[in-house]
Every structure is written in structure tokens, then in C-alpha cells.
Image 1 (cartoon, one colour):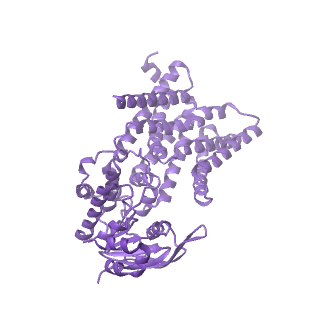
Image 2 (spheres, chains in turn cyan, blue):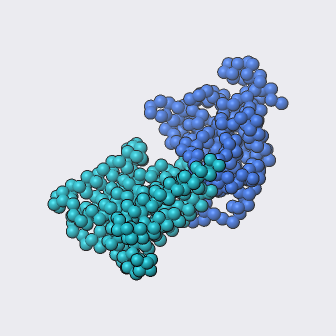
Image 3 (cartoon, helix red, strand yellow):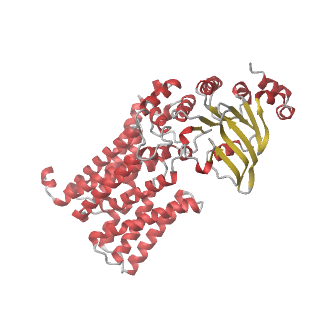
Length: 274
Length: 250
């Protein structure tokens, strides 16, 4: 099958467009999250997404709007993580652990009450590009625009708090606001990525392109740009590869990302050795 | 009469029930070069963080540039160089130039975070600090001295009127440390930048500071360099020999 034949499928076109938008968002936010040692926040919020999808399915909400229905719950949970860290004097990783376990627990309980896991929930867990409809594409485009604009406007503040939060505060930067912005943007991105790579694999999309780009960093801006290019490349190769080899798309994207990381990492080590 | 840049009154701060600052009262005037000295755990760093609003005092007031600290918003007037960066990641991918540019954020309201003149300010500061040649290097690749110069450049790029530093020379070798102090003196004399310097390095600071504040949770001594040299109380703290070395700076 030729590339043009593969591209003639509507679901592949939608997956490629939505996947590329999601990849850019994950890569951009991932650089900030990885450097702030908040990599697992994506994982935590993804688990919350599992709970919120279970709620939506339990309430028999139209599957076409499940993603939209999940957004408020995931946003609230991201606030929960921030509040726990701030008010309850709990470290970030513990707060993420609490909220993510609660999300999974709610999902499992509701799935059990509803009579077990059904195919819909499974597709959210591991991603299903067939499930990406035109509505999801529009949602991806809207959220892509919102998230990227926010990163553009808060770019210097985000870099400052990523470098050193205390130093940023001493410059009058409202670090709490910027932290909230970062977590909310991550929450939106996680919800968006759910159908592409699945809840279980979202954190890989946030972490791998960022850590790969950090291996070859020459400046902060360049790191973000390289991460975005690698992420889009991995998503495109992953989607094509999974279609040709009849493999799960989400897992294929993650494996391609990991291969790219290993290649870049090995190349760097080889160059250093010589 | 010169302007009061910092005035504290009866400042108290405690951490987990332990008193760290006890009724600390002092002032800093424009053009001062204030050396804050004191033993380990005497509250020097806490005092600096409280001045910058990073700690909330339990009691007392702070006035910055004549404005109560809670209402103060002109953070571009203050440059801060911490002892060590709390969460500094050696793999942070910013270049020296990108780091220095972050010093221009203070006082700029959203969305005008970058304005005309920023490039020239960065350029000038890199040249003053002698780090123009390493502007494209990642900060994690630099030596301790170069990193500290880059951080000082970040602190002064906005041409602050007040520069607050907390043990900035800890990681530096003696030669770099001397150059660092000379640079500070230059800023103090030529730009009339007011300097507050917390340090353990009493011998070096004796060479440059015009005023001394000795604290040990409370203010033990506050006075000019000459008063410090004549203070019997300070002789008691430092010993006659050490006080003589500190005072014999010229």
C-alpha cells in the first residue's frame, strides 16, 4: 500500500492532523514539566481522565462529547494537585499520587457498577485513532490554539519559574498564577491526547520528546523547537507504522519516540567519546 | 539627604516555632554598601528573603523605596543574587544570554514582556560582566565563576537601584571572588547602586563595605566602617586580631 493510498483514509488524515497538534503541545509543555521535575503530572492527570471518562460513560453521555465532558473534571483535579501541594504542605509527587489514585479508583468503581469494562473505556486507556472524529479535530484545533497562545504570552514567565521559582518570585513574577497556568494547560493537553495515545501512554508523549531534545540543547528556544519537531515526526511515523504493521497506534507512537531518544542519546555519547 | 531604600522596624520571623529574627530594625540609604555579617544560623538569609517578600514576617514592617513592602510593585528597582539557586538544574538548557534576559522581566506587565531597548541592555551588561564571548554557551557548561557572573548580570541588567546578594561568592576561588567584589564596588561607585551583601567573608567585605550590620537573630551592631573598627563589642565577637585585619583595608 502506497503512502497516498494510506492518506486517502479519512481517519488517517484526522489522526495525522490531530496527532501533530497534540504532539506539538505535549512537546512544548513537556520541556517545562521535565525541567521542573513535574513529568509525572501528565500521568496523574491522565489517570484522572480515566475516572472522568468512566463518569461520562456511566452517565451515558454521547461518546462524541466524552472528551469535552472530561475537561472540567480534569481541570478541577489539576487545581486539586496545586492546592494539596500549596495548602496541605504535601510534595508535588505525593499530591499527584493522591489525585491520580483517586481518579483510577473512581474509574474502576464506576466501571464495576456499570457491569465491567466495556470497549469504549478500553479504547480510552490505550488510544484508538478510529475514534478521532471531526468533532475531536475541531476540539484539538481550538485547544491547540488556546494552549499555544498561552505559552506564547507567558513564555518568559514560564522560563523564569522553570529556572528558579524563588528567583522568579523575587522579580515580582506571580509564580502561583504561572504554575496554575502550566498545570491547566497540561490538563487540557492530556484530555486532548487521550484518544490518540490513550490514558496509559500520555506521559510518554510529554516526557520523551522533551528529554530527547534536552540531549542536544543549544538554547531554551531551540530545545522547544527540536522537541516539537521530534514529537510530530514520531507521531507521523507511529501512525503510518501502526497502520502498515497492524499494530496499536498509541503504543507504536511511544516506541518510535523511545527509539528516537535512544538514537539521539547514543549519538551524543558517541560524539563525546570521540 | 539621601533616600531610604530599605527600612525595617521590629521585624520578627519564626520558623516552626523557633525565632529566627527578633525585632530587627535597620535602614539602608541610597548609595550605601551594607555588609550583613553574623554567625551561621543568625538569620542573615532569612532577613534577605523577608526583605524580598519571599518570607512573611510574623511582626514588624518593611518599607522599600518609601512604600510598604505589601504594596511595593517596582521589583525592577531591586536586583537579587541568591547564595545558590534552590532548584538549579545543571542541565537547564538556557544560554547565558537567555538567562540574563530573564532579569528584564521585573516590572513589565503582561503582555509587554519584551520591549525595545532590551537587546541593548543585555548587550551592555554582558560586556560589563566580561561574558560577551560566552553568551551562546549553556549555563550548565560554565565554571562556577562564570555562572556567578552570569547570575550577577541577570541581577543588574535591569539597572536596579538596589542590589541584594546572599553569600554570592561561596563557590568562587579567591581570585574570582576578588574580581567579583571589585565589580560590585564599581557598580556602587559609578552607578550609585545601593548594595546589601550578606557574607561570611568578613575580611573581604571589610575592604569594600561602607556600613556593617552584625546580626545574631537581633541586630548586634549597626554602624559605619569606622564605628565598626572602634567598637569594643565587635572586638569581643571577632577578636582584636581579626578586627584589625578587617579594618586595615587601605
